[in-house]
Length: 319
Image (cartoon, rainbow, N blue to C red; front, top):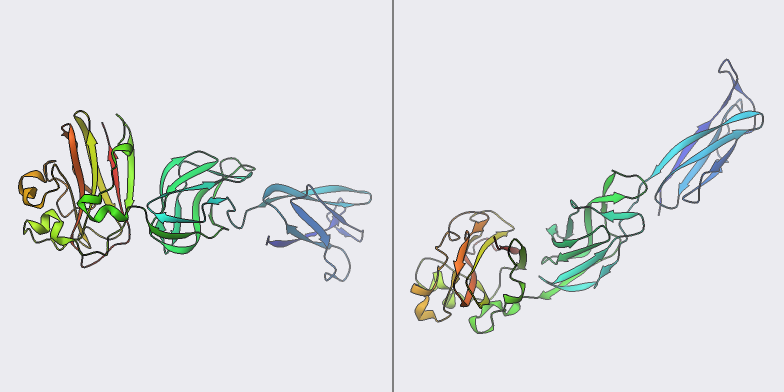
């Protein structure tokens, strides 16, 4: 439903004295309707009031006219009340990719962000003026909200809007990441030189601390952990940077890489990147590391899970 407002007009003579003359109101285009307010009865009848109803977003106007008098035009800016771009699909697993379309008059900008139910931010992985591709956060049902939506009818103006379409996150795209034998293979999403890619996962509820390298090595970790496998045909340099909802130590999250998935070999096979991502920092970063050809596992281990987090995201970059 669009907003309503009113405008009052008078006919003045050359000395700015109000005159008793009939006044009519006309909308400049169909994005607004205008009608004389029947409840407005001034005494003496030296002015008229119109009710303006916005029926669509636009930069438009209303013209007030009177017989024998010059017409006057009032500019109007009708702002949208919500963002009605299509969301596809309407339900999607956390960590999977969602597509959101723009509308004819509302477009995305490089600064556009999307927040899902419960205040959880989506990760924008591809963007044009007409389409966003977003990694779905683990979130509550509801319509997402948007920032920095551009108004095509008023260049240079952006607005923040709530969405008009509900979305529900259901399931976990990376559910198999809690076991070395079923670790998702991310080889296909590793970036090329100068590029980046992102994984969005959740703090798993399973108790797999027995196979989490820091926990298994007696380093004081409580787990749980997530493992992602990647295989290289030749040497390649990557940097893994992980952030999460929370603070640096609530929860305390460590990241590192292992060259072997055998628990007995964790002591020599893990932290092959040097261990720079196993600190008390937020975000954690392995720094650039050259990995040899072969199979490796990127590990996210929740060292202290006393403050579980709903969303953990990792950006992989390649210099």
